[in-house]
Length: 109
Image (cartoon, rainbow, N blue to C red):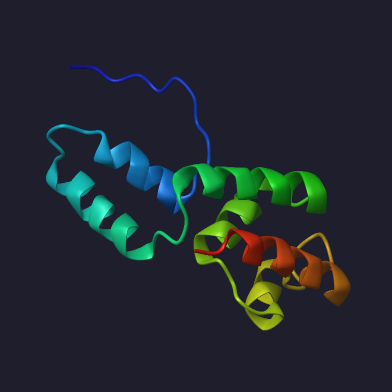
């Protein structure tokens, strides 16, 4: 069977978990990935997607960075800072990081 890529989209670990759980007969790679997703999922898939969209729109952060933030669900400003290291294009003030952290905390399980 030939497979064709229709589209590509960066998704969160919870979204990966939801997709893999729908597969009737997963192969070994899919089972390992599902095991990883089970261990590191910190939100429901719908909430993770919603949070990514809010981070992108409110804080004007690239989707890829927003997905990484949601995947790790940082609990402090110190844990959030590495996502905005000096090598990045944007510098975000501590007050904005606090606002971002408040938003993340609203979605925490």
